[in-house]
Image 1 (cartoon, helix red, strand yellow):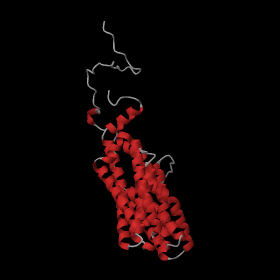
Image 2: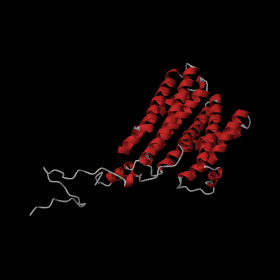
Image 3: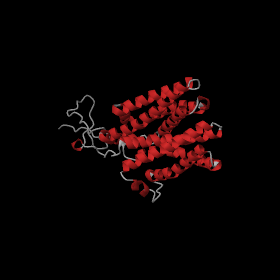
Image 4: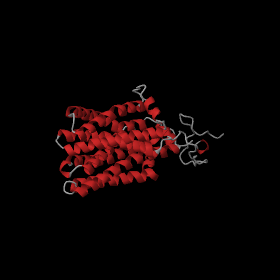
Length: 321
């Protein structure tokens, strides 16, 4: 009588040494090739733009407060105005994706601390008026105490405004976002800092832009480090960060941020033209980061393998049975 092949604890047949596998290992297939999860229906232009503009606004308010404290009045005023413009455009992009303005106001009826969307709506609702008051007081030259208080409030809310969209994305089931939930806020913070530093280099004279040049270098290094850390944690899902549209955008972001930071550090203090070019490169690099992460998320949601195979790996199961 033939001796049966030994089985593992899970009931699967284990091959003896020297035996050949008679049936080839099956390739992973989903039900009729359909995605396991539904990809977000968000518009890339609206929501990725909302991510970018919110980061620019929030980090810009922090830099504006620092510039005001150190007597860099031109830089402070310019960043306050740019932050107001950015948060206004960010809110417009969000409302455009929602379809009707009333849908945004409806989210302010209730505050749910467990909902990133609810918290983010209240953050925008509180930050926007503070950023507006700070910009209006700075441009008009009136009510300096009220302007200083509004500047401080906008700076206090700025980091949350710049990064809460990372929490919002990571709170979904999208593999490329959820799998990097620890690194994504740091990546968004670095990207936002790069955008604000770039805006400062564009709008401020070189004599006042020393903090922006330092911030640009730190942001470029932090952006690259956070991206690498996210890819290591994601494992096979990191392919979506390296391939296709997302890969092209994230490679462009790395080049633009690195080049912009180098130009700002080496020539930004001597040449107005070099400072503006470096600032535009940083702004473009920050936008590429946000749009690249957004594209990676959509790609990971469309391919069912990125949903199922990592889950099987964490449960100790083979990729295909």
